[in-house]
Length: 165
Image 1 (spheres, helix red, strand yellow):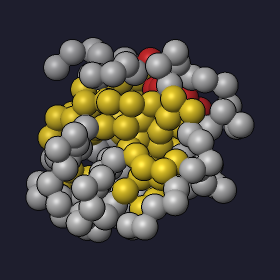
Image 2 (spheres, rainbow, N blue to C red; image 1 turned 135 degrees about the horizontal axis):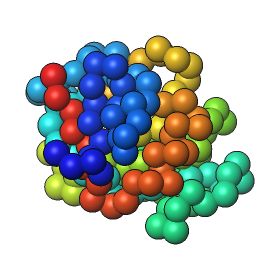
Image 3 (cartoon, rainbow, N blue to C red; image 1 turned 90 degrees about the vertical axis):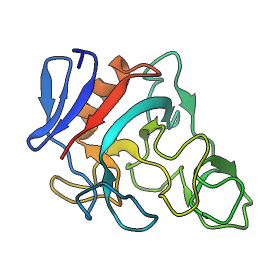
Image 4 (cartoon, rainbow, N blue to C red; image 1 turned 90 degrees about the horizontal axis):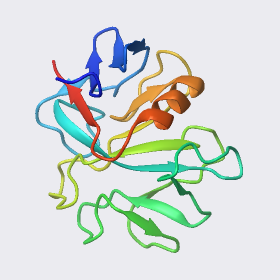
């Protein structure tokens, strides 16, 4: 491990000399991730992208991409675009990236089941803002808003996220 790795521990995410409290999926840590299980997958993942809401915050890093009003994420395992960003209108099951709440104001994307998604293995594992402290996610890793911003300002494409059980 390197000091530049993000390491999920039972007491939070360890990154660049800090330990940041976070929440994980309602299904806990899982070895065999499946769509809809609410689990956070064990393993070493890489950061692949950074999205942000330009109407709610300044660009957190030069490589960040703005979230537009028609941006969605496909969670339809039967679709060729499964576990990819898609645009509305979109006929398959999906999640809106531009939400009324602040959960996805800032999102770090990981390479979980990407770029060659296997149907049913679970769609995106994001790092994003939490709903409230201790409230579980659907499998993502969630943080306080200021901590999410701190992480996003320092992470780069390829940063490793290590999730061990």
